Image (cartoon, rainbow, N blue to C red):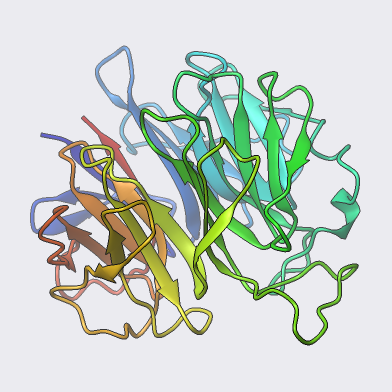
Length: 333
């Protein structure tokens, strides 16, 4: 059994059977959500909004308070545990910055090595005036001091000292990095989801390598092989089924998406789209693994789908008639 919390374009909700229970922050776009069981037995929630910073609740969403001490931007893209410091949290923002909290989200300190990267001032977003976005942070298994972060549009960056210093990982000509993930027990096997945009200092000439898709590394990021070429925002290795890779590519940004699965590390792909129309009206923004092993898909149109690995029969995870657009999801066992 587990509890499910949703961040939407109109606040936070708890999914309770066949209904959604509103938990506040009405009218705010909750673009990042984190949940954990507090020592008191209640649920700690952190809701990162797109424009109003972070809100914190220690009582499962009954009351909220701002938690922006130390943040220098109000636009949140991800909140997740920090593997380098047990009990700490990381958040990624627009512009492309990373912050750490050592007090369960009450206050934040910027990992300033990110903004010291050469070329950081060139990062950008096609849809926002802010300079790039950190969309997720990933740590390979058994390497808590190694942090990898996806920067749209800026590249793949890494720290090998828990976030103190940062450098770039070369993913060929691709710098529009939407997501970084890997195998749950093999630190050398990584996957990045890539878009079509290019840095302005690297204009694209005719005949150059195609941008976008999914790239795989079998050597911890030293070299990469493109295994899909359509625009992609979401890839996951299901933790309960690590022999699979799931991807959500689309030929056009935000529409005509597909869901594909590979049983051979990306060498070949087959449809994993039972229960939904393909091509989709939108595309998958993010795959999230639930505690029961199911995979949930947040879609660009605000839909939230779920399926069991192997069956891949997708169904809506929210009740019919709900107008709120889902942007983030968090689980508590």
